Image 1 (cartoon, rainbow, N blue to C red):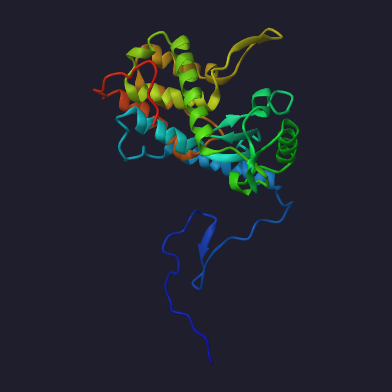
Image 2: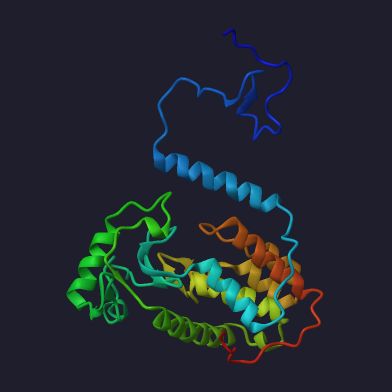
Length: 277
């Protein structure tokens, strides 16, 4: 039987300039001759493209939460709820709702050793510290770029009640640290407060130190333009200064939306110790 194709375009929407419609199919152009880029190089290129798209993307249109429970639920979604160890976007071993358990020497933290891990196949059996250390060493050697948390090979996990309790403890801890960092924190609109909570939960409070005559900064202290905007009460500029590398584009857009909402917020500010869902 003779084959034929109908005239006219095949693609309804070309993804970008690297895609073409040759009348029979929608396909990508062949790469130019030369060395094949490594998976790491491809990963970095994708992150650059995502960052470029995010800076020009419109703000999310869905409504900003109006309650503590709503804000905290979204932070949980951003961080993800993973009962087993995995490596995050920076390659750091994490568990639960963004609970970092890797220290500066790339070993499991003392807190991590004491977490109530159980064996997945026998949840009545509590893991020993040696078993937790062995699981940590197995996870930290697994590749992480381009992988989801669920793809890591593990045998131990935490139960949901402990993860919820630990999240509550960390929220209280970081809420207190925001009061220490920002004397006027109680006067900020609620969306701004929770945008900052999301940032400190992800980045840590951080600090400043001198290294060979140069000031080094970590955590929230890296965001100097954000701090200036907060001091001036310019919530839109704060949102524009809140972009973080290494997190989902959707999360960056959403947190910027929360900062922007502060400019028109009529909500009362939240209490010093937010109630948890």
